[in-house]
Length: 414
Ligand code: GLV
Ligand code: MN
Ligand code: MN
Ligand code: MN
Image 1 (cartoon, rainbow, N blue to C red):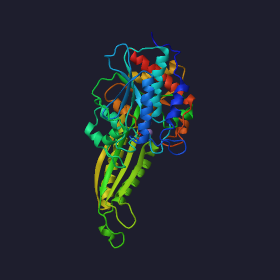
Image 2 (image 1 turned 60 degrees about the horizontal axis):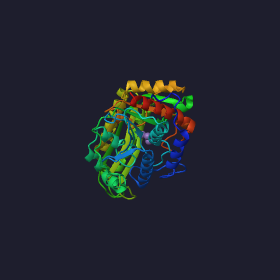
Image 3 (image 1 turned 135 degrees about the horizontal axis):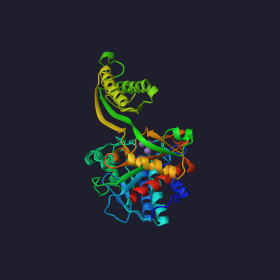
Image 4 (image 1 turned 180 degrees about the vertical axis):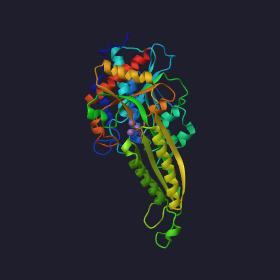
């Protein structure tokens, strides 16, 4: 029996899981600070796994800490349809970014249980580890590993900005699983996410059909200099790594302004230095930055300028620069058939919808490398995100949730 077009997920039940999630790793005034593999991330994972088991799903954890909760289908040798996102947050994160995609997928499974609908292919809900990259660089680390972009050793070796390695932290919180990471067939991947931009909210459009992603390039650059006394040491012999990193970051902001008229973005995201104290020059500094543009040719020029700016900043400060990490994502990566399905189901269910690109990073970008992938955006108030004031109401979320339900089931029943 096909899923009746009248089938709807239970938005109140989704909302109650979002409220419970909002209590775990509380950040500033109503927001979340649930950084990847910290204690709060562990607590949230434990709650999520409990919910999945209660819903009758089979939970597995892979060696990158990704959690999969499988709902059996009628033909369980077929590759599954995956739905998910991330439960980790930024240091001043909101209650919806990523969370809606994971808990929304759980709500889809619960709804199908209520309806007694068994899909042809199995469905799997996934929580990807460290989407944000706020504590371990780069972002989307574990979905990248699943898609074969990063080796498992590289993943386990990533240092947290507060010291421990990714693999150590996974073991400490009890989520260093046994399952191999990736290397298996996936029929399709759907990710429901708040827009994280103002378009849908401003235009009062219910569903965002994500057609493609901004082309983005991120960099983690380290500068090496030499410590010295800030008083007697001559200006022309200084090798202050802090200055080199600061010069790069200001140059990155300038690049953003140069491309602002055509929608380009460039962000100075992080500056760390050592010893970073009064009275001494720093011999080590780290800068994190990224550039993004809808036009891949423009983003490539922006990235080139970042590399040049890093070399110039190092030379002017008498330091050495090294690009320690670089990540590149985006472009026309989503599957035309799945995009059409999102558009079709939004219309069928009577929701207003529009096409738009994604400007933020998402696990879907890596999944798109190994299987047909699509994203569904919901409005969020004022487009505010990575901010404790991030908000999406039940009315904002319900249409996207129902589109996820119908798209995932249509695919899984195919
Ligand atoms: C990651 O989520 C990003 O968009 O920077
Ligand atoms: Mn997100
Ligand atoms: Mn985010
Ligand atoms: Mn993101």
